[in-house]
Amino acid sequence: MTAGTIPKRIGVYDSGVGGLSVAACVRRLLPEAHYFYLSDNLNFPYGIKPDEAVVAFTTKNCKKFIDSYELDVLVIACNTASTVALEAVRIAVKIPVVGVVPAVKPAGQLSTSKSIGLLATPATVKRPYTLKLIEDFANGCSVALQGSSVLVEIAEKKLRSELYSTAAIKAEVDALLGQDPKIDVIVLGCTHFPLLQDELSQLYPKIQWVDSGAAIASRVKSLLPTITPTLKPQRHDAGVAIFTIETAAAHSLSNALIPFGFNITDFLKF
Image (cartoon, rainbow, N blue to C red):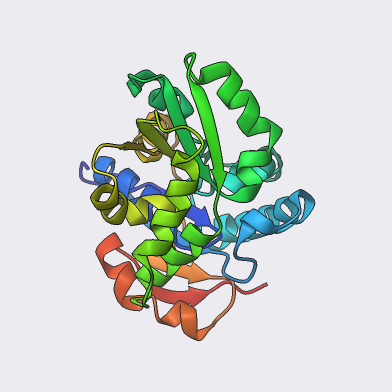
């Protein structure tokens, strides 16, 4: 960053803490930017909510997030929200908005058996958007689908330093592999799931695990030259983690957020 350059302010939004996996990828590629993270813990988890509800509170939260923290770019780091609310948010705000989609295309390119799996939330695996993605980009592979809310909850527990069961993780993945024993690549189609990468790799060392983090980071980087941030009051320092409701569970994440470059310093007020 040259002298006098204004750092870009990048916001990352998710229903829970899964978006931290995406934020980490973007920060590695763009370490000089200023980062803000909003978790909609009031409405967590999104994967079991009606589409119209997800659109409504995602749009409301993102508008407030952008205005309150003077963001230059927003990443909706939630597959569920991206598949149903991305266009609504883009219409409602004036800054670039990047969504996430399951990494079906790279998984299809990596697979030698031509059998891949998709682990996502129950809502994501059922959506026409996901099925069209598979139809267009699975590279001739057969694709087995497994929706899991259990893995979302386990990822949250892990970051809160609560007890969680690796047997429960295995049960979810085994249900996917039971559909097709030839699967050699699995798409982590929820941003929470890369937070369990260590456990997944230990349990299944022969499986290749693919997520969207690197692709999202590249997309954000490509947008930055088109953005000229204006001189703003910048009422908030970078590294802020915000939640939509103040709870003991949110505060319990304080230590877990530090390695990702965030501290809990605020709660979104409407």
